[in-house]
Length: 168
Image (cartoon, rainbow, N blue to C red):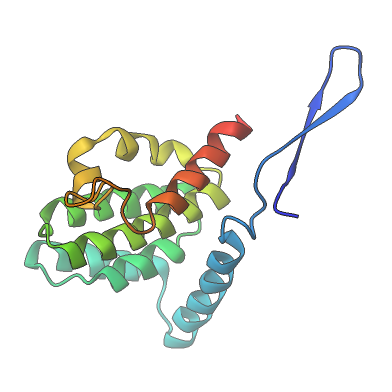
């Protein structure tokens, strides 16, 4: 079953359940597994999230950041402050990256990870400004120019975003 219950108290004290998506349906379980693997790898390397953040932050102005670096940074975020900093770096990265199709696809993939981790940390308020920024959405290939369809990973991003809105 791809639904999750949301408990709501009815005025007459009966419990009503509303449902939307499970973490498995939203692929959040996969993201949690990736997080655990990356956290172990960082620990094995003796790296802290703060050091990873500084490496990415210092590499960004030199255009030496890869989407993989940002994915690692996002997936190893442990707090809302970590996510806020990662979100800001990701936005800077996206806005300074080219508009080639392959870059947009990679950016959308990183965005999916960001939205997933924000959902898991109950920090979706960090995503709202990005979802309202037309220039940012264009850079992640939200709508493919040639076809007018949603770009890759965008339906998954929207499902997670919708799940958050529904839970409010």
